[in-house]
Length: 393
Image (tube, rainbow, N blue to C red; front, side, top):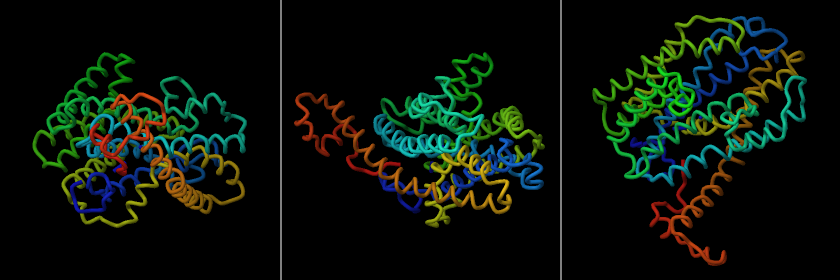
């Protein structure tokens, strides 16, 4: 659920520049998912079905689930970018500090709201909330506090696979391309043999978006070539096949059917937008508000669904949808900004420093009484391949 070499706005990480266009795409993806849940998803929160409450708007909102696929593609691009020049320890710290602070807050906040506003068919057990804090609820068969959290398990598995590339000699152009080719072929084999364990590890339905994102970043960092374009084209063609089943699942949640051709068109638009970023066509997009919007997308994604449905369920009979929907979206955006500024950023800094210090102690093999451990210095971090006190993505 993220954003090089262009002279855009820097994020403080080894001189890399932040691509504002990717932040804009993140915002688009997040708003698509929000629209899908609020306008098209038949959760029973509104007084009627989505086609009854939103006769026109429910149709475009019915394709909002595709925002997840765009998120995955952006993730492939950004993870490859942020791993360049880092070791596996740095990669692990950057991912933990990026994912968990806002996530921990969101799990507890959503659980509290559900507890304060109980609904007959929606209950949360404290032990399930506790497991959700680990982000391992999906593989352990525990109910998610919020339905959108399923994508985080997909992201975690992608990170673990990509860590194999970062390990050892670190990430290189050749290793990244080789990883994409091997992963794609292995995922196709996994789909063919229909083995659940291979499906869990290799992500045969979702891997194509991550691979395409990695290929687009390689174009951006180096230059486009035929091999990379063929890799992207292969991902596009295979992912079209998988979207048929994905749309069927989405229609099951929505309770109504929609044409398939806009799904194919939107996927083509996503690939074209990522190609524009990779080729540098969006370098003029440097507006500061895009960077702010990009920072809001992760907390917005984490908190909007279940809390939003509870708000709708409580107020929809008294407030017209044309008023309630924009007010709810504005409230969620403000809440996401507060979570980012008051929770995510401060807690990420504390967590990063603690993990860096822990890793330095482990790598240095320090022993002795605790009072001696303050002797770790910035040189200790750098000797272990760490950058002491640097801000991380």
